[in-house]
Length: 137
Image 1 (cartoon, rainbow, N blue to C red):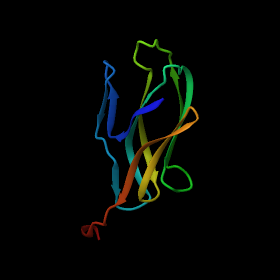
Image 2: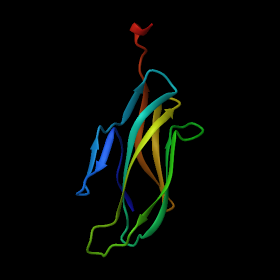
Image 3: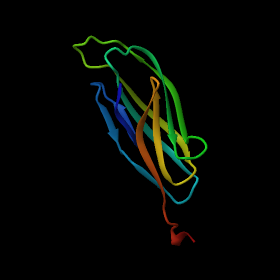
Image 4: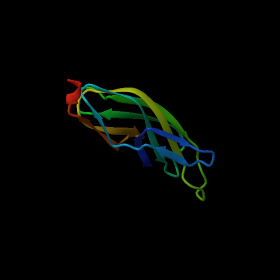
């Protein structure tokens, strides 16, 4: 099992041909103060399974920023169908819109993917504080 893609973006979808389209990929967000809220973002995760993997697998995604608790947690499961050895490996595509995520502090937030007893690293989202706009004082 391996992670083929893990991204934060503005929009994503899978078309009728099975192609994944990712729009507005980002690695950092700026906010004028903290805690900061991201109104909407999309998490994209693609897992490629081992040839002998089949059945239901639970997963957990945590977006950790070093605080007491994750800013985001997703618990779920995916069903993996067996495939003959002459076909491409089974894959899970997760395209998940997420709303109202609160980031308590500036700094790096790391996505941790827990699946099949392993913890895999996903993308890091960097939150930075922007200087106050003097025109607003």
